[in-house]
Length: 169
Image (tube, rainbow, N blue to C red; front, side, top):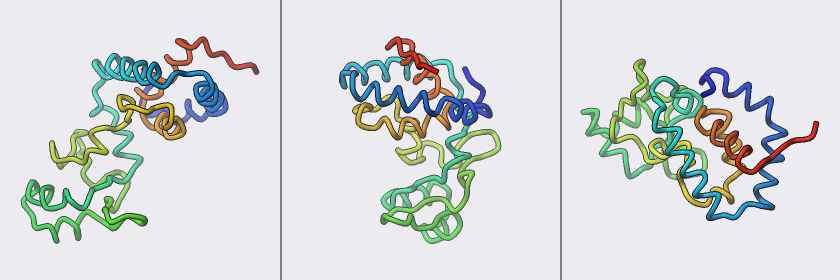
């Protein structure tokens, strides 16, 4: 598995190749089969991967907190909703939801755990979304994710092998 601190550079080196593979998949992959492949590889690779040793997603993104989670999250931390918003959040530019004020995410602890525990948002729990359906229609976002997540990077590399994808110079 690629090291977390190397994944962005390696993905950048393969940027043209990855875009060509994305185009290849758009033209040749069966949506249901591709979803099954993503899901199988996701389960296989995450089975032995300790995300707390990486947390690139927490380091490189601001956390997104849905408005409806604020009361629950504040209660979990033992503070009021107003304190929670004032301390950790700012309004997202194009929605009614919130995001953390900083990158790395304000809830990332030194040990790699999330300060919100099981209350962390679904978007965080589901990241890198490689086990979600409809991957064929979201391959552009997958290209972003493989620059952040070592497992997503490896999934894409394994898919290239499964499809016999080769680039020419």
